[in-house]
Image (cartoon, rainbow, N blue to C red; front, side):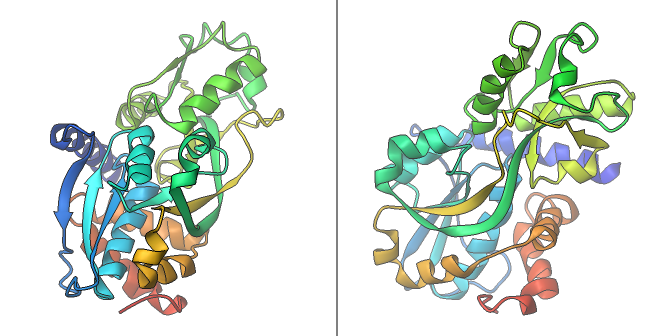
Length: 305
């Protein structure tokens, strides 16, 4: 339980820092350079990574990329944002060079439809990402269909994350497909706020419905289960991709070659996210990546030591 509390606090702090540090274009620079002491000279140029701190798939892979790219001679600058929309805009405009954990196939398809001609796909690193509707494991609900008629018992609310998230848009599409749009309100705010509601409910053994996704550490940290989706309204499994601004591979060929080789399975990804988010926490991401590489580095041909 202590780990869980610290993690939620860290995500909340990260979100607050992002909001406080955003410049007029919606981006907050955190500066380049790794604390691990393994950084390269930076003589091959500067690469800007844009990520959403509350979305820990991108948080984890951003720091993994920072470590690896600096070791082959690039300077890396980190930019934090709070919504996917501004991140795709920054990527398309060249203000951000890489989005290190995008969902372009389904969840972020609308952004790709709008900006795709100004974005390069640098490769997929994980192939089983999925959007879910979840409830506590002690709940009698097993399917999204079971939510019908239960609105009064659940206060008529499904707790979601950021308003601009692809998960939010997909959930809004799901509600009418199951006839739930008149019975439930999708409450949107932030990932941290959703997790706070989830923690409060599960601590009290109360029922709650939340939007989640896989891979995400919260699926293991909280006693939750995914509701079955017989209509497929939350979408099929998709891959997580590294996206670059148009012309990235031509400008940074060695970086593009390295990124293309990165592939993670469930165990490898889960270990990375757990170390970055839970075990080490905010401010110690570089050390977490070092620990992960020490444990898993020998499994990959692409790892730069």
